[in-house]
Image (cartoon, rainbow, N blue to C red; front, side):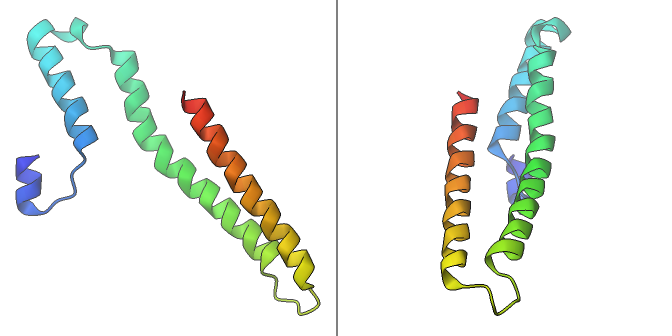
Length: 103
């Protein structure tokens, strides 16, 4: 962490903590002291989270561009409000469900 900070490289304290725990476990108790399945889940979340976030962001962006901000002039204001309200509610539901799933 010190070297990365010195050179101005981006560094994550979460990655440093996990690396320190794995390193200490290997030194102190050997290979059997590390819970490899738990470590695999953590590392998988580091890979899956940005990819899944990008996919969900892209889908939401395309839906908003298609429904809420069309190029046709005949799209009435009240229809835009209806769809915008729907998408705001959908985003609230997705946020709440993600918090509930993490517990």
